[in-house]
Image 1 (spheres, helix red, strand yellow):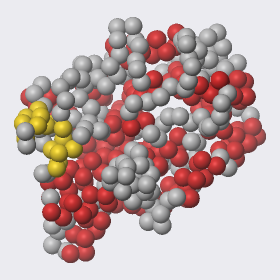
Image 2 (tube, rainbow, N blue to C red; image 1 turned 120 degrees about the vertical axis):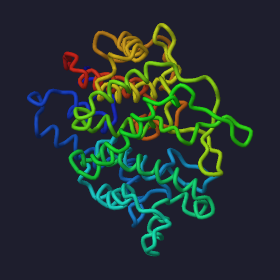
Image 3 (tube, helix red, strand yellow; image 1 turned 180 degrees about the vertical axis):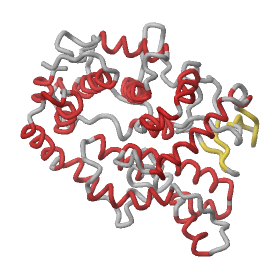
Length: 371
């Protein structure tokens, strides 16, 4: 890992995370690490996110939105994305913004329903739907979908934070894993679609993995150990090509475009490991590495080998004809990439990918020489 180069060329979050997460612990200078940590807390883009948090712990008046959306009235990404964005920028989960958001996210793990006999409980259940609160009043099926997806998103954020050992998070993770496991063993996994309202939709009875469920599991090693057989089945599932057929999500009476659902391998790489979306590939490869699946899935192995082969002798990612920083086509990486700040230095095209590849190598226990 080209640490000296990153410390000259990269933004404070990349510098801190490279030093804290890739450099071996016995090689870190505590004073230097503390200085990098202070720089991250003073990093203006991160402070701006923290300032925009509302008193109720939410961002943007929504939970699930990966990006701002004029159509939905969202001025910025939703809570689950801003929460994880701050974590990716190197803020520790003990900071106030996380504590304020945790109260609401833990409530989202509950199973209270809007038809509860106690009107106060019913009202609270509606409030937890956040951006779906108003439409769900007239469409209970949309409310059920929103509660299910919100619960997965909340568990993902809490697992990514400092709640790995919290029994509420682990209990929710086991429940979600059981539902996915049942789907993977069912006939629906081979024929997951049906027709509705003149469109091809995912069968409402199907419970495929979502990006939230995968990231949640990636940051819960205890659950991985307890559900080893399930993790292996996930690896087999993500080794199969995703369907080319366009489809929609039927949420109550609402037809939605699929954003979070994963039907098979999402990488879409060619035989040589080339991908069109490098940021998403890095995000997905890091999750697979944390799940211990990066070597098991053929496409992931090819893409990772390709990206490693594009690094120079120092470990700097240097593909041919790199004229601009990689761009993503997926909203799922809104919290993840880039960590590099604004600027015009050519090196800034390379810093994010260089750090991510070093981090993935460290997670996979690949020997790393820090230079």
